[in-house]
Amino acid sequence: MDSKIRYEIEFPINSSPQLLYQYISTPSGLSEWFADNVNSRGEFFTFIWNDSQEKARLASKKSGEKVKFKWVDESSKDTDYFFELHILVDELTKDVSLMVVDFAEKEELGEAKQLWENQISDLKHLIGSV
Image 1 (cartoon, rainbow, N blue to C red):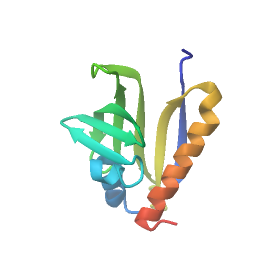
Image 2: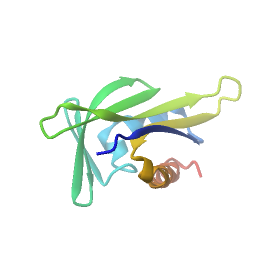
Image 3: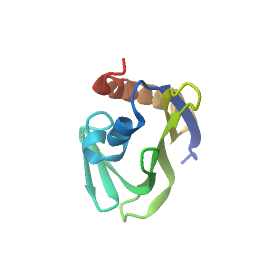
Image 4: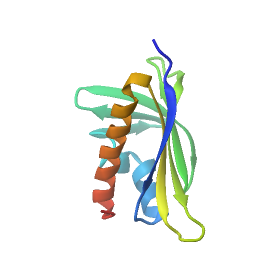
């Protein structure tokens, strides 16, 4: 299997950081835009899309700022891959954006970025940031 490459995309979002944080850090918030359903048990989150599901561990979070989920294997052991959602606030303009850090295989990079664009578009509609 090819190793995946890390990439970052930044999305401007017209929202308060506190509201945005609720949508990126809670199972109910994430299930409204990121996955069809999200369940959590302790530090483990299960993301469900159609007939597939992936499990991740909430590796770190900083209230109102960022969350990092590490993908885990069948035995709940951390893999090398994660995704991170980081709320950025410009000090001068107070503009808010969401930085996404994720991994994809080289040949799937464009598709992976497009998927994030679609999901963030759903998030923006939810919070009225269109």
